[in-house]
Image (cartoon, rainbow, N blue to C red; front, side, top):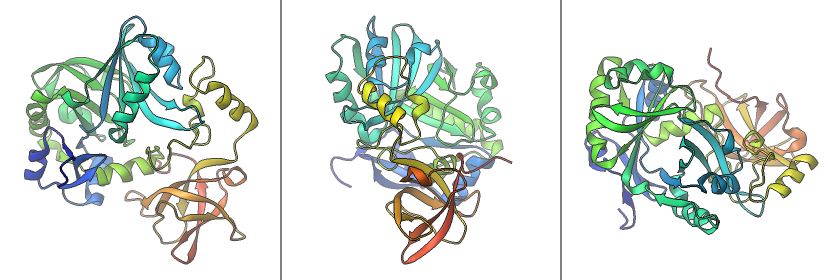
Length: 365
């Protein structure tokens, strides 16, 4: 393993559990324990746990905390109530996206930003560069472990571990309470799977205790550890963007279908240009699609129209374990972005018919 690859707190435990460890976003991470399909179905139908401790966490506190967050993020954080979380992004000056993130509001002068692992250093530099307000910033990424307990059985599997009534923790809300005998755990109604569940933020010294308690509490529900492979197929079925694939420094939030987190009720970095872009319309849009014949779409495969002309390219694609068909996300010329539009994905030398579909691609029946 390369010297500069970081290890998450429970690295050795994942090896013991049979996790296949691979470098991901600068960290040694479990990509799978059994099979991606089996793990995917565990989360869709039961309950599974992801160790996503590679994610970054920044605390933003003090009287100027909200001012800074409002300037560097696209969504309107002034609307947050205590105990609420918000999906957002950091726009750059060129119209692209520095990163997507979640903003957590604890109280008026205390927020946490959760950012992508691959962008921790970039985001930390970005927010510090723009902190002329003098908000207090602390990068706690190396101190925090993060477990995503996901699936329809998540609540009943771990309710015994906490006095917090988990069924009352609403989507994109959170509470701080006791969990597995540990105080001050952040219990958040968030996740990247669309299967329901929680994300649990604990200090590294408590990580192993909490992880083991989760599996002990959930054993009657056949709880399983889940790797990053299934995390990717689960998020693709939902149409959730992955930074570096579907959004990057050159894709605008308007093109990426993230207009809903881009609020022009306030000024933020590059808001004037993005507002003009929204009003004028964009040349390309991110769409979800489903293949109508066998084939697996992959990133950078060309997307064609009925005349065989290239109209865009795939940014993420897979064989959907829940739907047993090829699915993906990609940018297409705006004329082809409407739901129901027939498109073709060029896979090797074949043009496979597909259709633009409304997100999420996986519909719960």
